[in-house]
Amino acid sequence: MVVPTSKNLKNLFFVFFLVFSAGCATTEYSPMPTPIPESPATHPAVPKQGVYHKVLAGQTLWQIAETYGVNIQDIIDSNNIPNGTTLEVGQLLFIPGATRVRDVSAHTVDNNKSAFIWPIRGKIIAYFDDRLSANAVNHGLDIRAQAGAQVHAAREGTVVLADYMAGYGGTVMIDHGDGFISVYAHNAKILVKSGEHVYKGDAIAQVGSMAGHTFEHFEIRHGSQATNPLYYLP
Image (cartoon, rainbow, N blue to C red):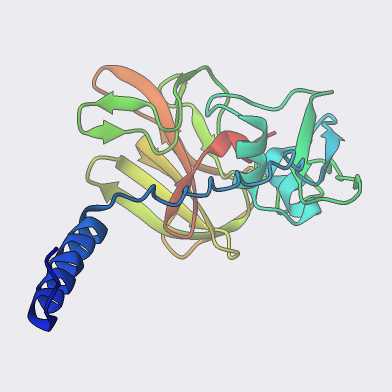
């Protein structure tokens, strides 16, 4: 029988330590399970607050927006109103943000100075935002009319331009004093002068032609931004 010496005991202890350490180093542990994140709570869509307004004869989109104190574009977006669409009597419009139905006065054009009228009557041959060519978009309405027919001021204001303008021909621009400017273009003859005060319905020009077509080009601008005239016309 071999009696282990103190030296042998030290060697055995060292070997045991190496084996134990190696075993610990190579031991594989099952990773901690990754917690599954909770899915966010789904809430039902909250309907927009608002009311439905029934359109009456003579009311315009602009008058309705002004009465309810909402942005005209918000009404357009909420009701998916296309560019070439005019309001119809009895049509229901959703007014976002409104808390009650209001009375929109459909004033006659003679009594309501802020309302616009048509500068001339005729078939619309090009609508707002229509693409006229690869590089040109219509910023108003093109209204077919007879050559020489009178063009009328759509609203009271001061003439700020009565002259030829590149791309527009004979042009009249009227500043209505509240941020709105109306534009009348492609006229054969201009009947007013810059600085002159005109009233709604006054004759300001005579219809001309462009590229073989006889029509009146009409715009309504709010500040520097061209807007769809159909939203303001009865």
